[in-house]
Amino acid sequence: MLLVLPAQAAEVRVAFGHSVAPFADAQDGTGIEVDIIRAALQAVGHTVRPVFMPSARKMLALRNGEVEAAATLSPQDGPDACFSDVYIHYQDFAITPKGRYPKGLRLTDLAELRVVAYQLATHHLGPEYAATVKNNPRYMEQADQLSQLRMLFGGQADVIVAERHIFEHQLKRLAESRFKERPFPVDFMPLFKPVAYRVAFKDLALCEQFNAGLSRIRREGVLERISAAYLPIVKLAQPAASEPRP
Image (tube, rainbow, N blue to C red; front, side, top):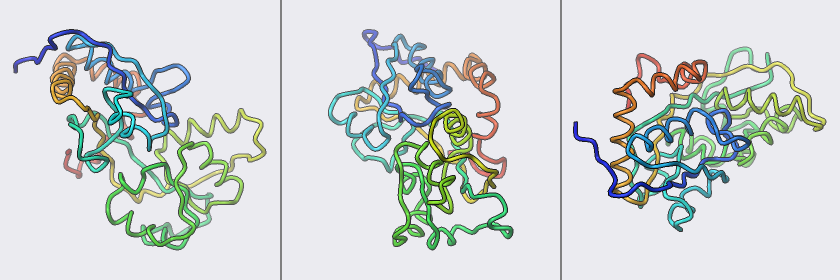
């Protein structure tokens, strides 16, 4: 395979959501997504500067030229970009107070409950999910995922929709905060298939360079070493064996 090298090395500003640690941590600019994207672009001669913002702003920032790339997206987020190869999967859950729904939940149950999801969940969890919550007046999405936990533990939500490792990171934040809401045991309802994420680029050549760099770090074992450093996250983020990879 020929490696697509840039004509000139550049600093690439990459937009990440500000509430998706430990995948991308705004506090220290690290995380498995940051490490993967940085390694892939470094493999083709570029450097990365993470820029953190609400998830809903990432495509707008890309269109406006505030950043050259935006992470954790998929093609339905916007037609006017080049979307890279898949570089990570998230596994989302419906998270509920432990024991409240002893028979479990079906996706259709979310049409009647107080549901608080992460920003852009209706874009990423598929048309069936979007149709289910469309007419639910008690459905909402939060840019700050700590707010999801506060609403669950404060009795303002029956269900929150979140990736498990993001939930656990925010749980630690809540426990260390001065907020009045206190955590209690929860159930993780596996209602969703793994979500494949890509990086969006405005520039086609940069997109192709990223794909070449991603292939290179996978071929040379760099991607495996990054994954090993975040093993609990990666194990949960991968699609089930029965699910075809995008």
